[in-house]
Amino acid sequence: MPNTDTMAATDDPLVREHRIKQQAAQEQRRDTVVRVVRQTVTFVVFLGLLAGLYTGYKAFGQSIDDAQHDWPVVGSVLPRTDDLNMPPVAEIFGQFGETPGGQDRIYVHILFDEAVFTLREAFAGFLVGLVIGMAIALALAQWRRLEQGLLPYVIASQTIPLIAIAPIIVIWGRKNFDVFPWEWQDWMSVSVIATYLTFFPVAVNGLRGLQSPRLENKELMESYAASWFQTLWRLRLPASLPYLFAALKIAATASIVGAIVGEISAGVEGGLGRRILREAFNYTTGPDRLFASVLGAAVLGIFVFLVVTAVERLVVGNQTQESTT
Image (cartoon, rainbow, N blue to C red; front, side):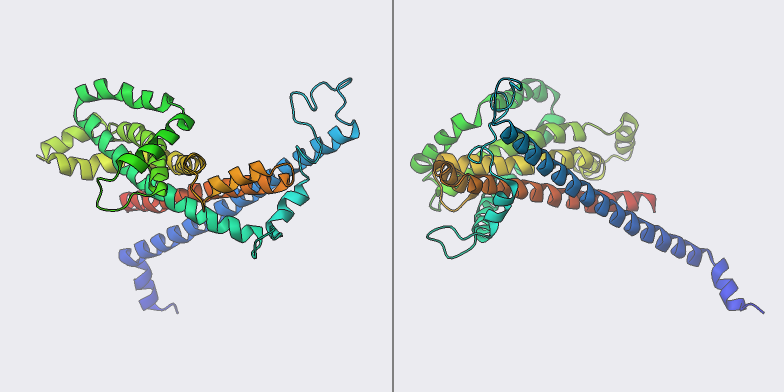
């Protein structure tokens, strides 16, 4: 005969609800693993196709010796396929395991240390840009007239070429930023440049997210006599998270770009920007190292994008789960 205690436990609504939650959590973990594996495989396949396209184009160009008679694109619109302009893929990736002259470490270790240095500059600029961007978004969301008057200038600020303002910021940092209680260093100017690229997407998307709650939700908070801060914390900020994380993905990768450009302009040693500039000077003797250093910068950008994506899944996923339980 069936155990009556087991049957009673099965009929218990609390036990049944607990089992349903466990099953839902298991399904969510399984879906997460499947999604990560699928995205990883897709990315690897994409890289393989890209490498195959690169190699195939190089082989085709070399087979016709970049002739311009029957195929007027190779070597003209598209680059020439000699080893100086397009190093073989095997040599580019093989460079990561080589030890450059005058160094006692392999190239991938050098790039890793320089990527950490650039990441520090970008992270500082990212945090400051996040604070400034959210402050602008909060101010514009609170005062409609301020939004109408200031938002066009926020947008116009991004029309200034970064390569033009980067040297100015570096010079200002060296000569005018001595008012702080600490010694201003060039890497801080690089972080300011990263901040310049970071605050804009945060401000624009943050404003859109703060304005996204529906009118009936705002009226409900007003009927509860909620304060401005309570409405912000309970309604506006949670509603803005999808918009904000979309902006943070752009801002995180833009901070890497700003840090690299700033290092080139400021001449800051120890980062990927200076490494790329140094390899560009030595391009004729080692083009594969320039390609490898650019790949290192690309990997760093992908890394920060994946970090923000993971945080988004953690925060927004928990928020969704709490709202459904």
